[in-house]
Every structure is written in C-alpha cells, then in structure tokens.
Image 1 (cartoon, rainbow, N blue to C red):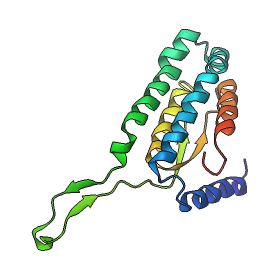
Image 2: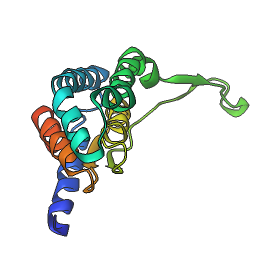
Image 3: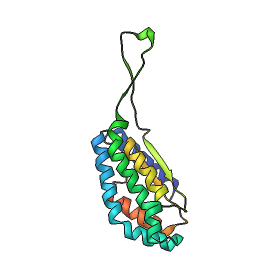
Image 4: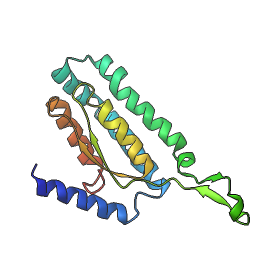
Length: 165
C-alpha cells in the first residue's frame, strides 16, 4: 500500500469520526453485535486458515482465539453502557457551587497492528475494545499469516464500511 492510500484511509476515517456516528452507545452495540454474528459465520473459515498458517487444530483455534474474542464481545455488550457513562468526581472547594464529572471520550482513529502468532485474537480483541469505546479503526494484520489475514479482511469488509473499520 502506498503512502497516499494510507493517508486517504486515515483522512476518511477522521471525517467519519467527526460526523459523530460512533458516539451513540446504540451504534457501538449494533457494531459489536454485527461483529459477533459475522465471526460465528466465519468461524470455520478462520479455523481452516489458522490450520494452514500455524497448524492450529479447530479446537485450539476456538479455545485460544475465536472463543476469546466472542467472550470479549459478550463482556463489552454487557458493560459498554456503564463504561460510556459520565462518572461523578469530587468538586474542588473553589468551585463549591458546581458539580464535576469525568466524561469518557473516544480517541478518534485507532491503529491495530497484529502479530502472526495469534492473528485472530490479537486483531479482533483490540478491535472490539476500540469499537466499544467509539473509535474508528485501521486494522493492519500480519503478512506472515496470509491465509488468516485474507479471511479477516474479507470478514471485516463484509461488515463495516472502510471509513469505519
């Protein structure tokens, strides 16, 4: 990929983020549900790809990668509303007539570069967290696990627009 292409991807994602589409918790939940549903559909293809790239059995692929990602998605679906809420904090004495709170806010565009040894887990687990936080994500899977990378790219492109993930 050329430098201009990468710059365009980041620019498109920044524009998508600035539109505020990723901020509502309902949007994040819908995106996570879509990921879980699609991950379950692609589970066999991912297992075959991991067998080809890394020699992982179907059981190992589920237990060490796919199953952990599904577990993380379930956790985030249960807790994303709580994580996105404002949290009250003590107000300094100098501002005694007001109230204070911390407001969680997403970074914007996040880069995920995953290694070859756990290509599904170390690509999708941070993706789950970034989506739950309300970010857009640039995903760069490893070139050393090419079969798994191809399935991941196919899966993510089928779910999300390129200016989101």
